[in-house]
Length: 157
Picture (cartoon, rainbow, N blue to C red):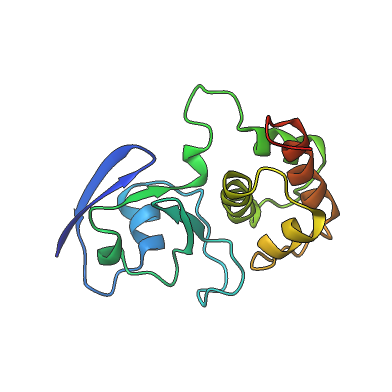
């Protein structure tokens, strides 16, 4: 089946098997390897992307379901040559990543939260990120990074 998906503002088309996962289309057809695949069961959140502004687990979604839709991956947060996205900068400043495998999923979940709720409480941040697992950091730096961005933004505290 032929599909066409807008990923980070660019059109990507290709022939896919009906069972091809969106994560595989992103990584292998579009060549964007920032979307990581961990558990392949939708539990770890490493494969989180946004489709039409909503977070989804790309390992649970078929590529054909994204046909004609707009996808944002971690590469789209700071396109080539652009400054880091404020969340990426805050993750760096707060040492909110170690191995980095889970980071793309956390960033896209946090971006969706801050777009929806520019001034979240710590509890709201933790709830929004509960579907993303990290085995390295202990989450404190991640939560603080998101709260830092909220405080710095025009709608934030």
